[in-house]
Image 1: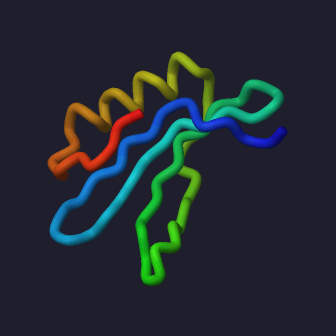
Image 2: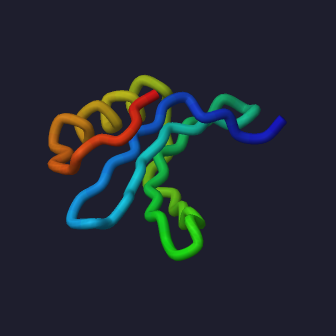
Amino acid sequence: MGMKTLAITIGVFRNQVYAYRLRQDEEGRVRLEFGLKGSERVWDWRPWKEGSLEEMRTVYQTLQSYDRGRWLKVE
């Protein structure tokens, strides 16, 4: 099955499209990842932090509260 995306925020800041997302693996581990959209619309994703669902959800919401970009999509 692989990784399941639980939440994603996509935004643009100074002409750079960026995103961060919460993903969960089959064992229930949750990871927060950052991504930048490069040339040819290819995303470059980097893992940042891993922990429990509650902990990662809190970090994700904190990121959203400080995010100064213009949001294009939130799921």
